[in-house]
Image 1 (cartoon, rainbow, N blue to C red):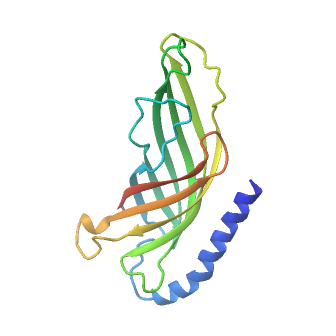
Image 2: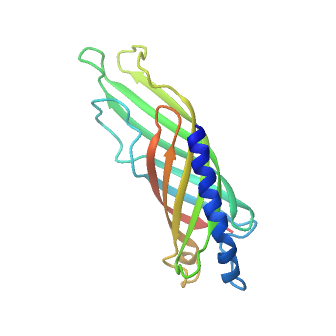
Image 3: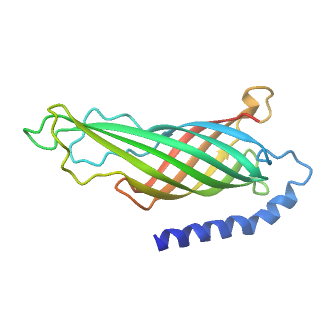
Length: 202
């Protein structure tokens, strides 16, 4: 945990150290991430939350959504939820088990447009949430395994791509978002990421 907090602190120091240069270069330009802006994102997970040895009937990828509002220029807070499901027999005579993981979280994010990086922006932040795990058995057996619900902390880095910023109307408000995160606590921790389509509401 201490190592994760240290890494997160270093990430923010690096981002803020460049922000002065970026802010100076963007004077007079319209800010996508200004105070009061709102965004909604539909996303899929790059990696699965599957945590048993012989899974089947797995989802192709976790799915989720997030909502973000800006409390200051370039600083957003938001909520997110991800979901994954799979099955496993956990042995020959135990019957089929169905596992589900919901990962609701709150996050804070700092956005940065680097000088010369046309059509893209970068961000860093952290998720803090709770992984809700459930297991059901077709024979009604009680779950005896080690997997369980628990809190998770996940520092992250990512980029927004503005493919359609020169258009007008609906498409001008669309971004493609890539994020890499490192969940450092709980049974569903590890390196992961998401790909999403983001829509600017306001």
